Amino acid sequence: MSQKTVTLNDPATGKNLEFPVREGTLGPDVIDIKSLYGETGAFTYDPGFTSTASCKSSITYIDGDKGVLLYRGYPIEQLAEKSSFLEVSYLLQYGELPTKEELESYQTSITKHNMVNQALKNFFNGFHYDAHPMAMLTAVVGSLSAFYHDSIDINDPESRELCAHRIVAKMPTIAAAAFKHMIGEPFVYPKSNLSYAGNFLNMLFSRPTEPYEINPVAEKALDQLLILHADHEQNASTSTVRLAGSTGTNPFAAIAAGCAALWGPAHGGANEAVLNMLEEIGTVENVPKFIAKAKDKNDPFRLMGFGHRVYKNYDPRATIIRKTCHEVLTELGMSNDPQLELAMRLEEIALKDDYFVERKLYPNVDFYSGIIYRALGIPTEFFTVLFAIGRAPGWVAQWMEMITDPEQRIGRPRQLYVGAPQRDYVPLDQRG
Image (cartoon, rainbow, N blue to C red; front, side):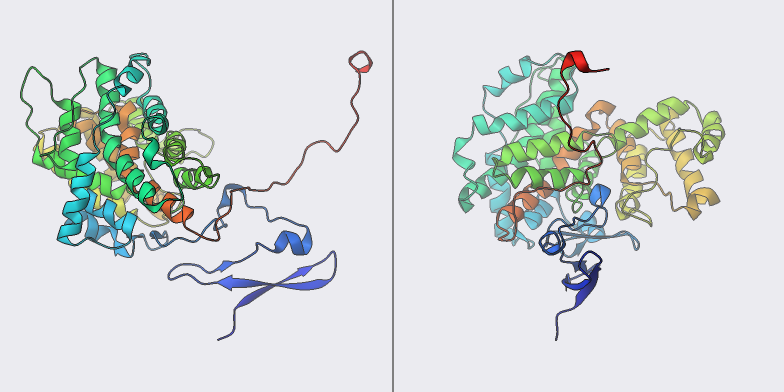
């Protein structure tokens, strides 16, 4: 079978240039243009890289038109219903679902590495009490390379694996320490007899003065949310991890770069923005006014948590978490909470109103995750931290894939320069 190609006419030379077409397992073909500059002296122009494949990957597949999300070929619906976060983490890192023995070994390794160096406690004392938790998380994750020198050799497979386990294991511990620092309570050490999600809840909410019982509905909901956030193809933070990692920097630095990118309100901060929006709307009685504002193209107000850049259909993650959201609210007796009632009213409108349905502005995963986190007693400024914990296995898997890809080179996007042409320096006293 002959290689598919695309022909481009170069007006500068009159030549027809052929570029190979590469086919993936699923999804659109890609035109391999890496020889374009050498052949024509021209670059492509694609702001935001919305039509550019920066790498090849076997980890995650998204079909935004059909609302499909696959981890290593497995539908997110099946994983969210039947799997656990650590099993999904193993799947993303190693490419296959683990056997019982492999999963037990992986869980043991994660539990072994969930402590952080005691000296890191002093690091937290350097932050003001009201520092944003993502500032603390980003800084502390970046500092891990100063404590764990034995796992930063990116050319050694065993070091890469050890580092991957450490990142997945330590993210909840670091995050919980940031939370306790925020509220002025003593740090809580991880417990080896608890699940990944249960351990995190215990580190967040337990106190030395009183017993804490983990609500199994909350534990299951958090584990499911972590699964839904575990990877999402070449999004901004994942691309940042890959770009930073392409320089050969240590993996802790690359993951810290991903944390910094995730912090943006257009990315990981979107669920925090949902709750801020609900605060702005105020009461159910104000919903019609704000719906009208959202429909007014001249009004800057936007409904946060609706629609998605990739999904032109219903976000499959939202379909899953919507049910869990209502279960959590019922279990915790919060169905009548005014702000949550407001959120449910917005959901009802978005699912029925022609304006939203025609534009496919359905509630997305950020809309429901923010509601669940609030119901669990987690403050809004901490939402993105939970996103980072969930995304850590995906970042690690993408980083490891990038490091071992023989075609991967240091990231170096090009540009269309539109500034001043070359000009001569004018002495200060001669400038008009």
